[in-house]
Length: 219
Image (cartoon, rainbow, N blue to C red):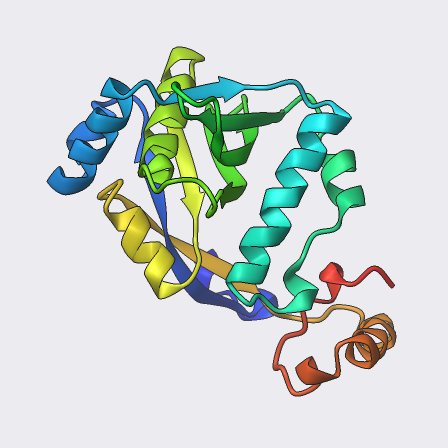
């Protein structure tokens, strides 16, 4: 079985959340979080697919950076503006903002990757505007994007992994998880060492890591 194939050095990394878009999405929410979503709908919260122009990409990036800083994320985990601009040139990428229907304030946003072949969506990156009133926009965002997926012929939506607290949040929005495996074998040790040395020079705090995510580096 591929999971135990030694040549790939594949290990269980996480158990990630996903949504079955073919069913009643709210029916798989915890009751408390389902109430949050219903209240958001009643109060006029909206999920808008927006044009991937410079203004909207810069807006997303602004809130994304603030969210990363708020979480005290390690610098090598940040995506830069060039990444967002390049990513959004692709037709399979969709950009959504969650809007307060009354004030028109941006409450949160998400970038979604669309896999038409397998009828699946992937939540790639998202943010919550911490300066706006907490109106449970993230719970609503998962519901609204799942409904968008259903309306556009997609059957499932992958929510990804994250920290324990993030998993607890996602568990409130779906009762489904899937095992996630990562391959750690290095196939080109010489090239990897060159890249790893550059990475460690730029991020010395990561020099003792067992597996260096060197693809994050711009070197």
